[in-house]
Image (cartoon, rainbow, N blue to C red; front, top):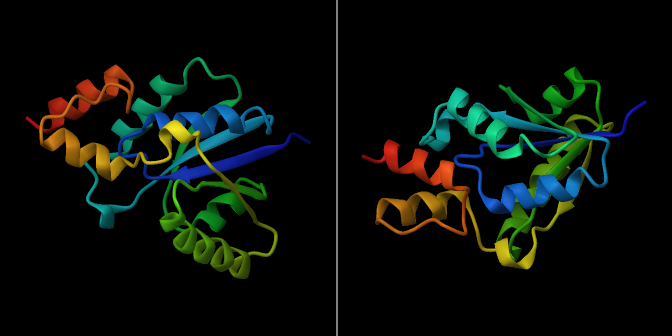
Length: 159
């Protein structure tokens, strides 16, 4: 049986911090399914198919990555896939409380699902998709935060 993990998120847009976690996760797991959540409450910049396509392009040279999308609870998606491990990124201490609550809630919903926290490299620890969108709206150069094609897609969306 392969050692497979799911890395769920909104990825709106994917950042170098996300890519850092994906690259390090595939060194631990045989396969990582990056699962884009349908979450209309977050008012995404990119629709689900656009986020999936940006992720596919960003990860095309990383072996062991599959891109998918899902609706509903992460634990239900994990169970449908017959898997057990969820990867969550922790950037700063401010992420910890929310992620800890989510991990405990997921464990209560399904004791078979384990959450593994991964921290991005220090150089990406401050990055968030929200910050990227806010700085892009103010005309900032996004080089160093997201791949060039993602920056271009953001600029096209914000025109």
